Amino acid sequence: MIPSVNSSGSRTIGLLAYLYGPGKHEEHTDPHLVASFDDMSPDPGRDPNVTLKDLQQLLDQPVMALAEHARPAKHVWHTSVRADPRDRILSDEEWAGIARRIVAATGIDPGGGEPGCRWAAVRHADDHIHIVATLVREDGLRPDDFRSGARAQAEARLIEKELGLHEVAPGDGTAAQRPTSAERHKAERQGRERTAREELRETVRRAVAGVRSEEEFFDRLAGAGLLIRKRTAPSGDLLGYKVALPNDRNRDGEPVFYPGARLAPDLSLPRIRERWSGDAQDAPAPRPEDAAPSGPSTPAAARRRTASAAWQAMLVIEHGDDAVAAAHIATASEILDALAKTSAAHTRRELRDAATAFERASRSHVRAVRGHDRALRQAARDLVHGGPALGRGEDGASTAMAIDMLFFLITAAAHWHAKKGHAQQAAAAARAAEYLRSAYQEAAAHPLGVLYQRGRRLNRPLLQRQTVVLREALPGLAEQILAEPGWYALAATIADAEAAGHDPAVLLSDAVERRELDTAESVSDVLVWRMRRMADLPADASELPAYGTTGGSSPKRRAAARASAPGRRRGREGTVGKTR
Image 1 (tube, rainbow, N blue to C red):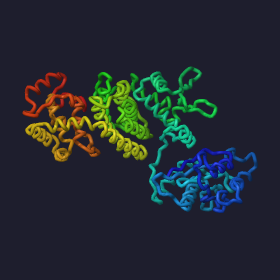
Image 2 (image 1 turned 120 degrees about the vertical axis):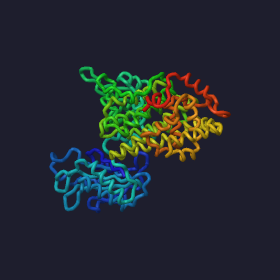
Image 3 (image 1 turned 180 degrees about the vertical axis):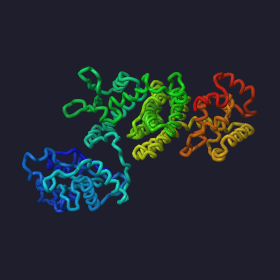
Image 4 (image 1 turned 135 degrees about the vertical axis):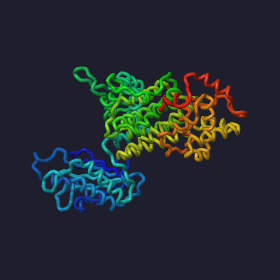
């Protein structure tokens, strides 16, 4: 249940005309009173002999009783109370009780013998009511309605529990502003799925991902086709910005501009600048274990670096300082935006939905300290500069690898928020993780299928040897993994790692050490991607030569593999050590 307290107005009759009218799209049906300050107010909706003017004069009576100079300029208080779409339809009597509790909680009409304001609750739809009040009490004084919005929210949480309604997670004031009803109706008229505010928020978020300067940020906004208006000080310093969609115009034909801060709290120019402030010379130097490997910005390489950065960020969120963890969580939002922007068609919608959902989880009252998140921001930048990925080959397989790592990173963020009591952020991160799970299934189906077939073709002695390796390295998980369909893909990966000169037992141990696996649908799938990343094996195994079908991987073949990768060393001293 969501109460929304609006700004005060000056015309009671104007608000009543809207509440009792047909609505902008004939959406108002059977407008009528469900409750009022004395439960005897005239109802223009049900009594043909009563007019809106009658109700307006009754509500405004305490205001008009004051001397003209003492009347408040804006004396009309208005709030809507909307049920969750999943809730049952409430009766008029239930809505009446809700209205009385809201006006009492907000100080409009506290009850208990205390003087209150005059108010009326109007219902014109199944799922919500509107409460209109005049802000002068019966004794001529102003009501104590300080922070009435927060007080209404707190009372709504109690009402939900008592009536068995869907319980909305309490907010903390860090959420982005919702589109107004006027913005939603405008989008419907224009045949757009989303409002201009929502489209602009997503476009600006994507423009911020991995950006390093104001010039680059505004170049990206212009490249996305947005209209930009900058605000400068007399000194010439840039203070802020506004953006608009070219086709979003007001009734005078002028573009409708939105300041960055009105799109989301962290999209104001000062907050955006904080993102690259960690790149300054006086920022904390990244630790070696925080750095993602460098290399050319191809789609596949960028996704592998994203997987490495996500691996490290997950450990920071689980064990790091709150301020540093908050920075990594905020930057994870940039990673999701960048990945959605450059994804292949078959994963694009799920990744975009994941990015949109996680946006709410990227902000809290824990202020992020930037600098240590540079590896994650660089990964976002690499994704953008790497360009769009194909849905097949190494691009597609490395996308599955990155999504797998991001799923656990976002899950770690959900756990972090839950521990801090950030209910809305935890719920948003959990939703994002579910979208990532769907995207992973789409991205991983083909590359895991290839690995599965390679594992099925392993001869019996080699497969038995891989089973022994698994049981020795992971005795607590081995039987579960052996029962999973993905075991054959993992067996192929163990064989690939061994052929490349790595100790598979060490890789397996490192793949599970200090990293949770409880949320994995398939532990073998997770280990496949972690091992292939740590051992620098191709994510797409379709081009690898067949092995082990008759006699296993021979010593000569393993020696040749080691010779072809001179930078790799066995065990913890090689790539594994660098990724921890």
